[in-house]
Every structure is written in C-alpha cells, then in structure tokens.
Amino acid sequence: MYIKNFPQLTPKSLDKISLDLRIIGLEALEVAISSVEPSKLIQNNVKIIDDKLVIHKDKFDLNKFENIFIIGGGKASARMALSLEEILKKHPEIKYEGFINIPEGQQISNYGSSSEIRMNFASHPIPNENGLIGTRAMVKIVENTTKTDLIICLISGGGSALLPLPKRGITLEDLQKVNSLLLASGASIHEINTIRKHLSDFKGGNLAKKVHNTSKATLITLIISDVVGNKLDSIASGPTVPDLTTFNEAYDILKKYSLIDKVPPSVKNVIEKGLNNPSLENPKKHDVCFNNVYNYLIGSVNLAAKEVLNYLQAQSFKSDYFTNEIEGEAQDFGNDLNKLISNKVNLYTKKSGKHKIALIGTGELTVTIRGKGIGGRNQEMILSFLDTIKNEKIFYKFLILSVNLDGIEGNSKAMGALADNTLLNQLNIEKINTKSYLDNNDSNGFFKLLKCEIITGPTGINVNDLLIVVIELHV
Image (cartoon, rainbow, N blue to C red):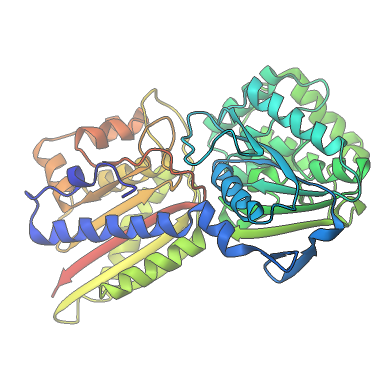
C-alpha cells in the first residue's frame, strides 16, 4: 500500500460506520494514486511499433533520427524516464542518452549504473545550485544537437523550481528570494508561474526557442499535469509551449501582492525592461520556434478522479465529481465546504432509508502564511472546515479526505489528512482550540496530535490535489 499509516487511521475502536467510511476513503485514495503512477502513464501512451514511435495518434519514424536525447524535470520525471527507458531498451538499435532534474531525497527503484539517463537531484520548491547546474547541462545537450536528432522532454509538476535558468542579470539567490516571497504571498500557481516564466531563459517556451535557434531538431514533450485546467503553459512553467502570459501580467501580479518593492532589484529591472520592449517577450502561439514541437498531455488528476468515481459507485455510493477547479485560499474553501456538503445532504433528507453519498473534487488551493507552524493546503482546508462546524450537530456520518497526491505538502511530511465524526467529537471533548492552529498555519500539528495525518512519503506522482467526501445518511 502507498499509505504507510493505514492501521493508525483505521483503529478497531471506531464505530462500524466510521471505520467502514475510513477504509473506503483510504482505499479510494490508493486507487487514485495507482491510476496516475507515472510509469503506467508512459506505458499507456508511448509505444514503438514497426520502428515508429507512437504517441496518441501520432507516429514518428525513428529511422529518420540519428540520436535521441531525453531531458526535462519534475516530481514525476524519474519514473517517466525509467519507464521510457524500458521501452527504448527493447529496441537496442536505438541510441539514446538523457539528463533530467528530480527532487532531492526522491527514492528511485530500478535505477542503476546501466541507465543511459542521468538523474540529477535538485531542490523544490526553492531552486538551488544543483538545479541550475542540471539545467545548464540540458542546454548544452540541446546546443550540440543537429536537425536529424530527436529530443524528448519529460515534464511534470515541480519543474518550475527544478529547472532554474535565470535571465542575464538575475542571480540564483535573487531567484530564490522571489520564489520564497511568491510562495508565502497566497498567489495561485498560475500567478507564480507567470512570474517564473518571465525571469527564465528555459521556461515560458524558451527551451523550444533554444532548440529552434540551434538545430531545429524535432522536440517531443510528454507532460503530466499538476495545474487546474491542465494549462500546458503553466505546467512546470511551459518550457516547450507558447507563453500565454505577458510582462504586463507579471508586473500586475507583483503589485497585487505588494511585492514590487520587495523583490530583488535585478528582478524588478528585468520585468520593467520587458514592459517597454516587446521583443523581450517570451515566444507566443505563432512563433516559428514551435513548428517542429509536439506537446502531449499524458496524465492528469482527471484520470484519478474518474477511477475514484468508478470505485465509489461500485461501493454503492451515489457519486458526483462536482468540480475540477478547486482554487483559492484554503481556509475560505474549508468554510464553504460545509455549505456544499449540507446542500447535498439536504437533497436526501426527505427520502426515507439509507443513503450513501460521495463528492469528488480536484484542484489546488493556496495558503497565505501568517504563522510559523507546520502544515499544507489540504490540511489547512480540512482544519478550517472543522473550525466551521465544531459547534454544529451533525446528524449523518461523514469522512473528508484531502491530499496532495505527490505525497508531501507544504512544510510537513504528510500528503494531507482526514476528518470525520470521531475527530470532530474528540476535538470538542478535549476542547482543542482549532482557531489557534489555523492562525499559526499549524494544521499538521493538529492532525498529528489527533493521529489523522495521512503519510505516504514521496509517491513520485504529480497531479492536482484530490478531495474525497463520503457520507452515510439514515432517514
């Protein structure tokens, strides 16, 4: 199982319905994680048939390429690379080599000295020197390609931090500072990536531009999405896709979060130069640099949600994938979640009998950091929900589970947390001050105390966050 503390989360002391709901919710989570495992996504979407590389409905004749170079980065890229290598190894006549950036501390099974793909450990969410060294190594590979080469770029969430290449005049330290400011500001991932793209010579379509300007080699990108709406230009800040954002938007975002005078002078200077010189803008939709570029989305949280939906329906739950656009402040969504659940439950209160209801949502919330605690967006959202309903009488059994599927969220070691009637009763009996935990952004401290954090460790998976609500109602 992926969930390492499953026994702790399902103690036999729970009443039967609460225990059943926890088991069902956690098993649904296992289904979700398994469905978007990166190696499975590669195997399902990439084939070699009759010397042709087949991706979706497209075919690339491998006999036309002298070499294959594999580059990229992200939280899921290690397993993507190993799975791609398994496919290539079955065809020993194909020459390939690669270099990718992956998160520090990520465990890689089946990776050894025989691999032709070098994996370089870099930091996330704040970029470091190792990430910069790795990205420069990829640029060197690109600069040595010819038109008869094939470049396969592996991209997943986390690539924005793992693939740093600041524009001239911006130091790595400057980049680290602006990333820290953005992550603490409450800005959405789309807003953060708008800034990142305009400070980078790799992201925002600039990798595609480098390939075009050096060799015009064929560039294929395999992408696993971790952003709401699967916007390709926002996933890892879109190194190989047209940038749909502008320097004007980047400047407005810095102003919106009162960061324009807090960012390093070099960052402000690059943004302001871009405002006054359209030629400095990142490549847009009709730029010739994309003429020989092929981008493929091979996985997203939508697939996980679909599998969870099927699983819960098989368990006799009337299930609803109610949104794939969960966004905004975690505490605000936690407050609103009570209304959403109440409205759903009220539809069944006039129908006698037992009702099993499930709600599934996906997206990514944000947290404005005000305290010094340990936590993450999903944990903060559920804690906010509990703070909202702690004085209410709940006449139905419920379980809420919300997680970051990559296994780690915020500055905690948890992927998320769960909450139910048992937890609600416990915090009321023990008179735990949920508001104080919220004010200190210490949601993990709360869930660790009540033994309801969900622990998997890094999963090597990176798609949007997943919310599962299961309810049993007797009328």
